Amino acid sequence: MALSERQHQILNWVQQEDTLLVEDMVAKFEVSSQTIRKDINQLAERHLVRRTHGGIAPVSSIENLPFDHRQFLNGDAKTAIAARVAEEIPDGASVFLGIGTTVEYVAKALLGHKELQIFTNNLTVAKIFSVTSTSRVRVTAGKLRPRHHDLVGEDTLASLRQYYFDYGVLGCGGMDEVQGLLDFDPEEAAVSRVIVEQSRHSLLVADQHKWGRKAMARVHPFSKIDCLYSDYLSDQQSRLLASQGVKFQLCK
Image (cartoon, rainbow, N blue to C red; front, side, top):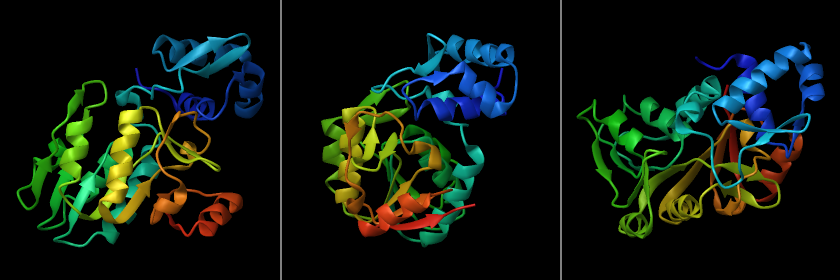
């Protein structure tokens, strides 16, 4: 059974908090505590949250949400972000598409482009491009992470370092105003670092709910990124990015 819109909102919210109380969810959504507890039970049964006394907490700071749920979370925002990124990338460009479900939306938005050279360690991205013959696709070597449908490790990094891409498109597990970009897995973070280093233009794709998420592995400070594509930024976040020389595009 698919998650409801309220359950999606709860799932986004709890990723930004150490704990989330039932009473806070009741007040925000203006529903009964019984309704919220039913939501909690369904989320916990799917191992998307863990129960605490009086509420819920994120499952872990070292493990991202399951792929199947990330794939559809905040779909409208990811679609808008992907469309704007696709406008930025011209036909004939070399593009590395990294790990993350927002990156996969970008892949779909690029299907109409001609003569792209696509490089990726994301097996879902490779599958998306298998329907077109107008672009050349190369998949890196690496160690398979079956749960995430991607490749990581030293072989992946070595594959990346053979090239210098026109555009590197990457996602992230979380964004922190002090630490910058974060991911859940150090090997995933290492791949993102090398994407930035090996790209003329590094494009970060992340919806607003990535701010404050409790991922543990550092990737880069924001200053290393050329442009952030997102659906919303607060005034404080906009000033922070501008102070570090990062361009940003709001996509709606």
